[in-house]
Image (cartoon, rainbow, N blue to C red):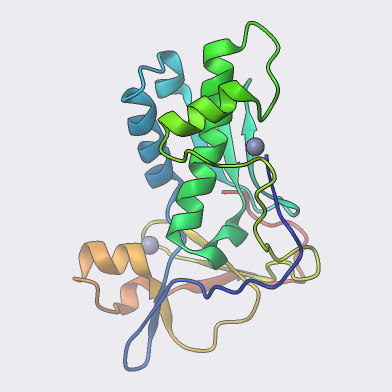
Length: 201
Ligand SMILES: [Zn+2]
Ligand SMILES: [Zn+2]
């Protein structure tokens, strides 16, 4: 599990500025899952390769990532968006290392961030990853108050603040309009802070 400290993010979210509209992105879970599977495939991780799933979990507050052995599930906190693609990737690998270590040595007791896990991190390309590594994640003090939705890829984009300018889904703009802003992929507000039930994704 990757813990998060409660400080303001020094990073800005990934946004592409055009004359007026903005494109914005939270990579689809499917894309991260594909990445996880190709990483595991290269390491001969057996049935784990086909079973592993990756989800964005809006309910996570104090951790940025979580690994569930029984369900072969990696859950990621959408607040990771604030830290950019590199931190999303690193957190994905950190959690995958928990699943991989468990897959390899699960018959006996291993410590969560012990040697087996460190070896798995090494194999997954994040040697030197530490258990105590913290991200200055925005904590409970700043919940994602607004959730936007792309009707094309069904992606969800949690935001602390209401989006004032026209903003479109980066993934779809890249795929279908050469990286240019396209009204068809404009993000629509689906939930605001008054709603209690955030969608899970
Ligand atoms: Zn961990
Ligand atoms: Zn989209």
